[in-house]
Amino acid sequence: MRRRDFLQIGGLGVMSALASMTTGYRGFSEEMADKTLKVGLIGTGWYGKSDLLKVLQVAPVNVVALCDVNRQHLEAAGELTAARQVSKKVPKLYEDWREMLDSEQFDLMLVDTPDHQHALPGIEAMRRGIDLFVQKPIGVDVAECQALVRTARETGRVCQVGLQRRGTHHLIDMKEKIIDSGRLGQVVQVSIYTYYGMGDIFQDPCDPPEWLNYDLWTGPAPMRPFYPMVADRMWRSFFEYGNGTLGDMGVHMFDMARWLLGLGWPKRITSVGGRYVFTKGIQNIPDTQTVIFDYENLQVIWNHRWAGRLPDERHPWGAYLYGTEGTLKASVFGWDFLPKDRSKPTESGEVLYEYDLFPEDQNEDPSLHIEKHTSEGMRTLMRDFIRQHEERGKCISDIEEGVISTACCVLGNVSMNLGQALSYDIATGQTDSQAANALLARPYREGWTHPEGGPF
Image (spheres, rainbow, N blue to C red):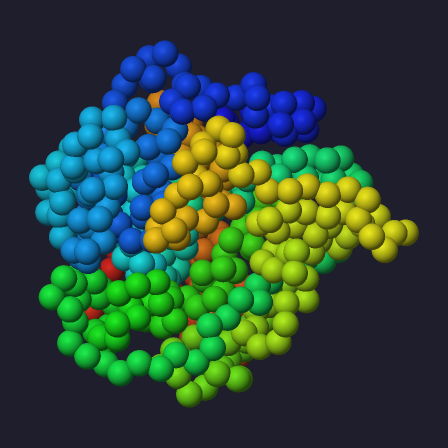
């Protein structure tokens, strides 16, 4: 479905709109339905498999090649793909994404690597004429983000970013019913947050296992001693590979707030935080952080902390939108609207699981760790990505939206580390701080070349 199709959902009701939609491969033009698009995936771990399964559910694709430096992940993904795709063929398996791009032809490329490896393969794929789906955050520094959007525009490639709130039905329905209708009134503040945390992590360094090419896994990042946790999802605990909880969880909620309210770049970004509680482990990201994205007459305020209880069990990762006519609570699991004169919600919505349309989701192998509450949103993004591949339009979660949401979170960490507020100038691609400008591009390890940043 295209974005304008979603805007009609409120009039039909979410469920009736879904009934008018299609399942499986239907919903595309007859010409498109007869095509078999050649798809590749770089990064076959947790979310790589998740994204791949969504593509296989919604489109007649042929997954021709997979790439990962982790041979265990790669071989498992090959078997999974063969079991799910129509051809039943095992894709060709590659360890190095550069070799894969040199050897195969693709229509679409999915990049689901750890964050520090998003930019380079994404840029190279687009330069070779391949449309790109890249997971959030699109880069680990501002210059990577700038280079990605510039490449997309210069090459004319379609680029979708995995910010799935923009394709999530219960939030689309909420946006139309409560925000766009004016029932919330003027929004004066937005609180975005997560209170998930990991605590101290204790591991000893060791030799990398024989099934992991740790040098290629590290790529342009600084070479660190190997810890077993980085071979799984816990690489997020190190700034060398990402941007902490803000860059991982915060980018989703900041992007959701921007989308709901039609916000672009903030006027100013200010952040404080650090390791206040969990200070003994090997992780090096903040356990507590606050960021103010200042839009002058509106502030979007991010908070995360690893200590204490969840303040709202129903909405553990989400946003509170405070308006002159009430308060709107929105999260990955549902939403609640409280008019200003009520202490309890008068209207609510729930996440849509689509088990009736895709029963395999309910019975998915637990070892895949599929986030069932995000599945319908991801399918929406994948349908839209493939549709825009045909129509050559901008996606629901276009690369430029991904740049704003990612770069602002990156700058939030820069503000925290420098202890100063920052303003970003779109025209120059610089901030108002020389110290911050020196941090817009992270140094790459020898043998890797940083893409050129600057305005786009």
